[in-house]
Image 1: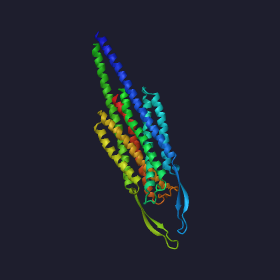
Image 2: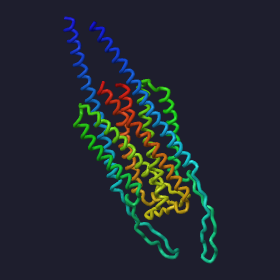
Image 3: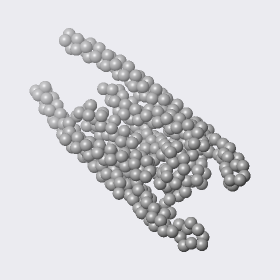
Image 4: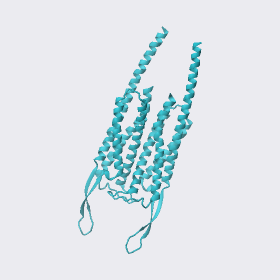
Length: 198
Length: 198
């Protein structure tokens, strides 16, 4: 009788534990999915904003004082600067990985795949490194374009290409938000996975 | 008799399990300590190399064709470019954190402090973000100094300041090695901690 009672209690405990674990797993997977979706949306938006960034402007240049200034068309395109090319490529890689990892998380929700989990953590960390290096590069060049540098005689260009520079700034902010989502993923995933195991 | 046998078996199992766990914890903590030491050494080396980076050169400049060229002294210092300042600050923060976290890991080896573990993972991830953004910024400016950019009329400066540019490149490589150590830490720590728990 005592053994039977214990079995019932054990049975109840296991069922409750299983139920709690399933709830925790679902909540963890949902949180992970939301973060991956945000990372995907922000990085694809950043890639589109920088990829469509170009501006042409007619600038009056005075060659000789006695003659009226010549109107010359000048262009700014994102692929003129290698830092912006790297930034775009980093965001394209990150949003592609974001989409694939989102799909994998959705398909494997509720399951425990340790090797896949480790691989995803590694790739999340690589995305953070990739995105932040891209952000650093784009921001450094953006700041140079905005302020210029008298020591190396690099003149500012954002006084001419204002729209171009604003679009770069918007793209950097979007990419920063995406990389923060990846950063949150690598900080939160071990906690979420630990809860799934307990 | 049967119960006594089971107790002995259970006792042996627990002792073996405890022993295995202690060994695993020690190996995990050693691995973590080595990675933190590497991160500290590489980032402090990167900070020193960029912090001591300056070069002066005498450049002959021809103002008028009929006169001999004027010898003008030109200088390159790391703090002339804000990207290098950011890069140095990022490396100083990372090596300071590397030293503190190394000390904490050493003092808490063999203990399980969950909250401290989470905080360390968060800070490791922030160091990766900080270092990679600094590397991106320094590399973008370094590349610009090496190649120049005709579209925005930013001339290359590394043909004049060769030693300065080589030192920047060495510092970037050192910082990259340090940030890879931090990257390995955030990928490996959940695995090491998982082994410590099991």
